[in-house]
Length: 401
Ligand SMILES: Cc1ncc(COP(=O)(O)O)c(C=O)c1O
Image 1: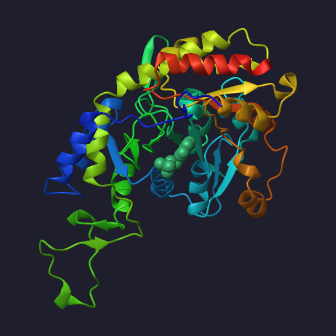
Image 2: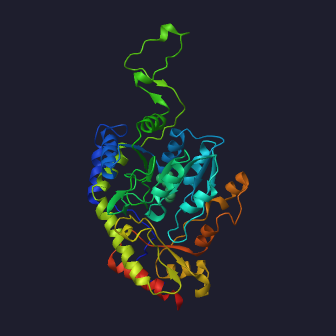
Image 3: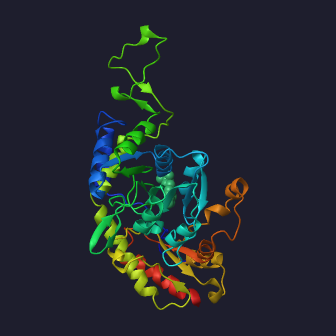
């Protein structure tokens, strides 16, 4: 067993400034519903270049809200990638819509636009385009396919905070381009920016923004223009003083605290630095692994995207047969050298709930199943030192011994 410290596959990055920001929030007048929530929303919207940002308690809640704001429900089909965390599909089920899956592109491991076009049916009312590992899908194509058929495009950029892509010399941020109606980011600790737990929805659409805000807090409104009244059967109760609110639809409490937003604000101030370090580590890995015949490194959709992607994961494809070792054995061998690894993701439709509820079965998305059978995520987090990166490289290169 190695005596060197363990390198996990992912880890949060907390600075002294982050800690000071949280302490300052704790000493302030507001622990929740205070000024740091508004400030984080404003600065985040500005950062990505979008009109509205609605911050919530996690990205699962954010995805749920996008479904409700878009008015999706029973009878609607929502397409997402099978190569994702459960939430990208569960959000459709939460509102009674049918989650369905489109196979991935074997090069980028992201939802394949050609397959989406081929599988299209009239009941598809939304596409949740997941930015796997931080890399955006082909958003212009996906938007063209979905939008021309009247469906909403939700970008699940939970992995991609701080990242983007480049088309014809123009750089776009995830959430800051014209090819999604709403974009969601996650602020879970292993992601590129953290608030402990947290999520946000970005949109340029005023109506969606209004609805997302209201649904975040119980479906309540204090906006007089939205009032419907308590009913003409209760005239004595009709006074609408400063205390007055109405609940006009059914919402949740998906709020986030000022304590968390203080952390988010502090992290946002150095997000570009964080994403650059992640890109540098990925470049080192790609160069070191280029000659290995048992391993495929991740590829960007466009070569120039490599300068913009905010990599959350470094997921490689390993030919375990060539190595004559199982994935469990490989993970054990790496663990023996104190190098962590993880497997992301099991195709969501193979989960018992999805098989039992929707009748999905193996073979539905063959590229996604092949990807999963070879997938291994190697350590990637900004506080990794160059020596840590080198240790991972050596451990991986020695797998064929
Ligand atoms: C692609 C994707 N979408 C959504 C989520 C849900 O995020 P959260 O944990 O903030 O609810 C995750 C979490 O890992 C994710 O990876």
